[in-house]
Length: 77
Image (cartoon, rainbow, N blue to C red):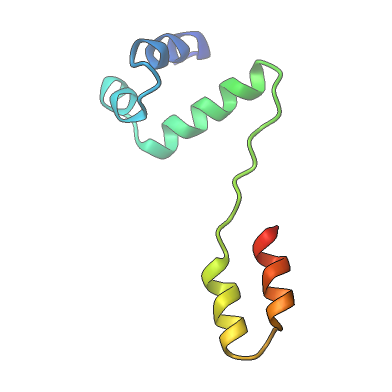
């Protein structure tokens, strides 16, 4: 499927990823990947997923491996 066809389906489904999944018979990660590829092909920078490491930071804080200040700095990133 080319990007134009994907874009048409995406717009037809009003951006609802679940509907795009059903329409095209593809998985959620595949839809997300196709959206990302479309964004890049339009000349926009790819979206960087922000990883949620908050539970890891809290675990380290509870174990005394890092200070409260270090934990705050890590969570702000």
